[in-house]
Amino acid sequence: MKKIILLFITAFSVALITGCFYDKEELVYPTTGTGSNCDTANMRYSVDITNILSASCYSCHSGTAASGGGIRLDTYNGVKNMVNNGQLMRAITHSGGASPMPKGGSKLPACTIAKIKAWIDRGAPQN
Image (cartoon, rainbow, N blue to C red):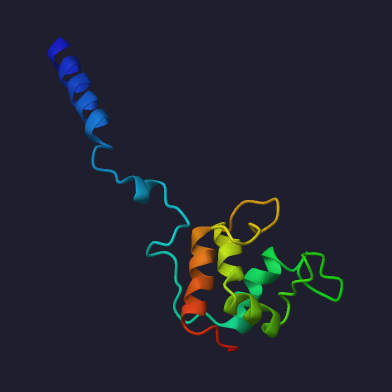
């Protein structure tokens, strides 16, 4: 009986120790990074980009009383101007040369930044 109990404890211990040996951190703890789970294909201004800007930027950068330095991101022309002068990417990536945005907040998720960059890299079309 002692041998059976010892065998069971040994087998259980081995299974417990090696059970997670081959787990990959990125599979066990997925992130919202720019990996394969971040679809940046076919980013459209009218849907994807405006949704991102609405959620993250419009509270300060919209309307006639745009409190964010007079910068309006609720119109295509306003966004396109910030794209053309490089300020939009510098602001959202916190890379310098522009105030880090969102002001007083954390940097946007990597996937969100990748989506904006993909749209810009395709010429920032008004689609």
